[in-house]
Image 1 (spheres, rainbow, N blue to C red):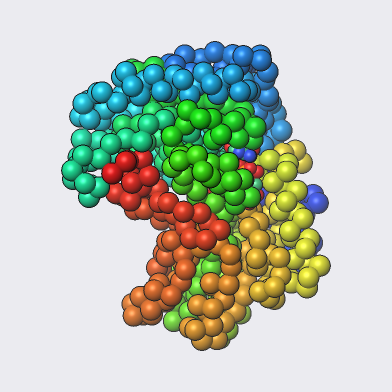
Image 2: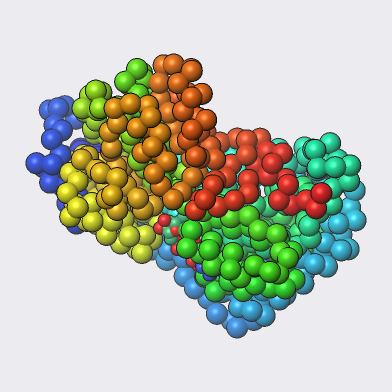
Amino acid sequence: MEAGKGAQGGYVGRGAAGQDAPSAELAGHDSGTSWDYAPAPESREIVRIAPEYGLFVNGEFAPAASGRLFPTVNPATEEPLAQVAEAGPADVDRGVAAARAAYEQAWGPMPPAERAKYLYRIARILQERSREFAVLESLDNGKPIKESRDVDVPLAAAHFFYHAGWADKLEHAGFGPSPRPVGVAGQVIPWNFPLLMAAWKLAPALAAGNTCVLKPAETTPLTALLLAEVCQQAGLPPGVVNVLTGAGETGAALVAHPGVDKVAFTGSTEVGKQIQRTVAGTGKRLTLELGGKAANVVFDDAPVEAAVEGIVNGIFFNQGHVCCAGSRLLVQESVADAVVQRLRDRLGTLRLGDPLDKNTDIGAINSRPQLDKIRELSRAGEAEGAQRWSPPCELPERGFWFPPTVFTGVSQSHRIAREEIFGPVLSVLTFRTPEEAVTKANNTPYGLSAGVWTDKGSRILWLAQRLRAGVVWANTYNRFDPASPFGGYRESGFGREGGRHGLAAYLDA
Ligand code: NDP
């Protein structure tokens, strides 16, 4: 394909089009050579999307009591993919009742080693159907196929494998001799990692002996519904996992339901606070995994090439729709110009476009409202005096797109340094001393994650002790493993997911 002309899929090349595309003057990157890629689209034939989906309650798919449906669209094309049932209060009642009955009659009394077999089965089926899941995730979410294929789906399977191993060893997990499940878990998840977040929520809950009612995000319900089909395929007893699709009201009804013993939420800090108010005084257990504004700290002795890869991965992975994204680059002043130049060169090689193309690095923004939010904050960055830069980049005409964007000259008071943008937008700040790096990194109401790039092990340890973040990555970024606990401080929420610590949320020890 000719550089700069995408069919479905503009990509980094020459020229600019579209509201958010950078001007040639801003671009400043034209080496005179162009690489021609042939498109390598993954076939969508492997996925059969039904025109209509019901709710998954008590092991079966059925319409919502109200009969109401809502559409889910492909954000890369705005093409409607399917109509999905919208669960109302009567459906939430039914879902919670099914989960309660399954907890008391099937899953609770089942020997833990038997429960483990179901988790293994789900993990194996996820692996067997991994291509189908990857394609469906990229269609519904807009993320590049190489990410859904190589990150989301394998990690989701890994979470079920890992927790299958725990199911019959809970008395050795350090929570006392006979930890008990909590009961019925109401779980509300966001749209940025739809399948992976479902796995993060379901796998530990089930391993600990709880039953679940899961509410996927409105814009990305399809892989959670395919996972429900996998539960059927694995022969999971009816009611152990229930999936109620719908909007925020469905989530609100679920977390407020008196039959729910434990609420687990991943999403915005604002909604997390609302949920905290709802469950206060009810005796329900609660874990919240909320937003972030992570600092990725690069010292002058860091290996520049590796650090630049880490910066790119930190903010442009999944279009920056990542709660732990390294959205604030803190770079030591003496190397700032060199690092930013290397970063610009690297961004010039990223390909934006068709999420199903295996060459694509940057996919679509998940929804129109999210695109509007990214645009609004980027405009605020310019208005407050920061310098905006993007590589030359042709944006597809249809769908929701935003080019990889770097702001330099950012000060700590700018909105783009304080608010979660949740898009492919990096704010660059500088520091002179390690102490200043710590002060600036911690100057945020959030506390989810951070990165540090340096040659010195002692400096990594010094910094890690001082950064107020749940996860600190050293000379790497966005590393996830089911055995490793993940979670934040302050406005990033509380509780941990993954590892032994993550089991605690689902056990009455
Ligand atoms: P929300 O927090 O609104 O959505 C997360 C989940 O909660 C969705 O399933 C949503 O349903 C549901 N929900 C919404 N309102 C309620 C409620 N009152 N009670 C219970 N559940 C509810 O995130 P948004 O999708 O609106 O994104 C807004 C911003 O939040 C983003 O721009 C980003 O900054 C941040 N965000 C952070 C995430 C993280 O992982 N930290 C993940 C997603 C967003 P529905 O999909 O129908 O709205």
